[in-house]
Image (cartoon, rainbow, N blue to C red; front, top):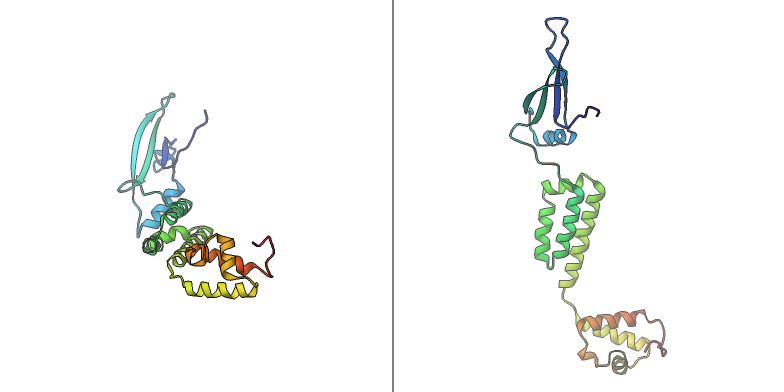
Length: 205
């Protein structure tokens, strides 16, 4: 089996010295890119690594020194995954039912340390911003007071435009008088009348 190198590990091999000042061992230490990037991001100065060493004798009798390194103080936290953050945000947004909860979520997402993760992938940051904007708009609309008098007045205007008897048509359409319609039914009724372009025919009823 071919010799395999592993991240954050290495090996020192006994060197063939021809001069006194040459090293006794030479070899390699393979550093993981993720660990390097994390260390650079979290360090304000020099970076110190802890190195462990094991002496290993090969079948041929050669002595190799196997190395393993990790940051001083332990392994760094792995870098945050922007896509995982986005998926988690979608779940949190779906669970928000009021503006208070939404504002708390918004403040957490926009905290510099968290928002920096989204911004590491611009497309994900854009999608996150769109999701937040859409959710806020829906919550604002849902909590905004509805002016029923304005809806009723506009219903009258459209009934007159379409030459409809407002009481009779409401009974035909909803099987109950206008005053018994719910807010949602009044809004739906208004949408229907707005979209009607001419005097009603049998299909409209």
